[in-house]
Amino acid sequence: MVMGQTGFSNIVDIEKRFKIHQKIVSSPKVQAYMAPGVSNEKKREDEQSSRENSIHLCNPHLEKMKEDILYHFALGTGTHDFPALFGDVKFVCVGGSPSRMKAFIAYIAEELGLGSSGGDYPNICAGTDRYAMYKVGPVLSVSHGMGIPSISIMLHELIKLLYHAKCSNITIIRIGTSGGIGLEPGSVVITRQSVDATFKPQFEQVVLGKTIIRSTNLDEELAKELLQCSKEINQFNTVIGNTMCTLDFYEGQGRLDGAICLYNEEEKLQYLKEAYDSGVRNIEMESSVFAAMCNLSGVRAAVVCVTLLNRLEGDQISSSHDILVEYQQRPQKLVGYFIKKSLGKV
Image 1 (cartoon, rainbow, N blue to C red):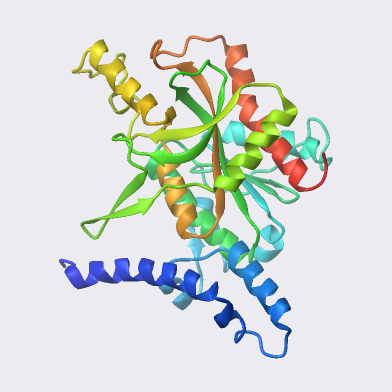
Image 2: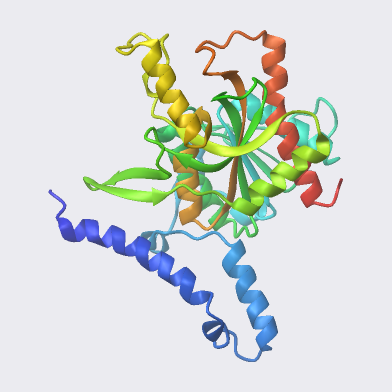
């Protein structure tokens, strides 16, 4: 069956209606009529809190489903009590590897005084080998694999999980590694915008054979809060800059050391310098769809990645294992401090 223009238009219309709905409910006139019997000030506070802090699902079809199976998490609304399991979650940290996210949950548990050193934290998604998920107190730690397709699948199910759990006031932060541009290795980049390989702040999603352009802006205030936290801990260089999200690790990032390379070093350096001049400070492979999906879902989000090398000086990661381990702990330390500060534990 070939999907006509009408089918595609419905998708675009849904997104437009969602954005219009957000604007409508923010209107003071609308707020005044949405909670009879309550003071206008209270109504405004309640509606603002609900609007700003709840998860929005941009999918009307989910309301018709009796059960929602999150296949890649091995979880489902018919088999698990999502509000009981996840209803207290306020912070979600996502990263590429399961081992890194398990290390993060152990770290944050100790930082928050919610666990003992060397404590064991079970994988909530043990029924599948696609992703790993760990939880302690109000913090959820989830692996997302490598690249846009992998993190996209995870985010679809994570956002639905948070919605079914009736979570509110959620902050999602991607922590990871990246290649830096014009920065010393070990520097941490907080993403202002995720840009594509042509330096445009957008994510292209092909739906029903048509291309949809989605915004990749991230929460500006959250980025500033994270930068301030880095200044307070004062342990490593941290900057706010644009992050280039590519479709692969080698040709897409202008590397010379892949199995295929049909350009020369001069062309590579020219491209990376153009990226730098456009505001790009690091390169990775997940931030664009992460920003786009969090925007559509009304979730406050940030990307915090450490740079493992300066791509203007080379392509291969040659630092020692111990140095790389310490580098990879830097986003965890920064985000961990941010969570502690947000909970009044600093």
